[in-house]
Image 1 (tube, rainbow, N blue to C red):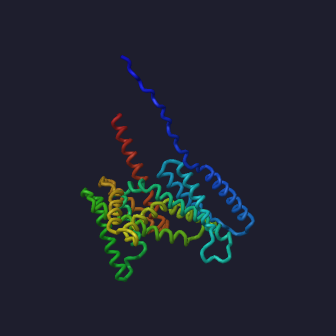
Image 2: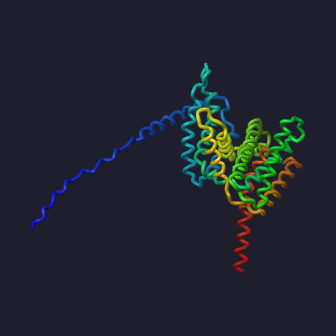
Length: 343
């Protein structure tokens, strides 16, 4: 009995499509960016005008350093900067009502455009990482800072009814966040939503004050003394560090507002879910909350009494320095426990 075996037909594998080769595009963009940059450098060297301020460089440094602190990768920082650099050439497009085009005025705005685009890219790129950072401790820190901000500004002495109502509402939210951090109440979805929205409002209020105060002050090169220049540079640097968080909180607040072309009920549901998601459900220890209160109260009292730094600078300095202090304190406590066990 013979078995007849059918001859296998060879099936030719399908060739995968090569896709679009983007390398020529990147090459031409790189050539254009290089040539245009050389042209800008030439314009700067032949002109007697001052185009860039050291203050903006301090601002950009703060943005880049905070971007690295979040990503932990200089490659990501570098490629995002290159992307912002290329897109920043939109600053040289003629304005709508610009009759006489003068490239010098566009060069002055160019560095600011790089910073703005980089901050926007970072805020979108780091959205998930920033979402995971909000806790009871941060909300407590913001509430204490707001109380100092209101008192030092003198808002309590204003007799306008609207201001009084806003102060009472803000005080109630601040007390709510302080009480939550000192107690062990369960962080429900409602409480996390309230604390998240409250944190965004406080950060945005600080942002408006900080941006206005920083950009209405002198530039570093206009200062007469080194200490004054250092003092101005710190303000710009702290603004750069906080820029990503400021824009991120702005997005969280605007998501709660109705959109003309959207379904507000659906959009509001997603916005509330995003606020709840970004607020951690783990509670901070009462000891950490008391340390936070002591730390903030001490620095704000001494700053108010001795007038060491402007309020907006001191607030951001406290906000960004306290997590470092807590981290060092926890590290020292863990090391002491290890040493005691080893002995």
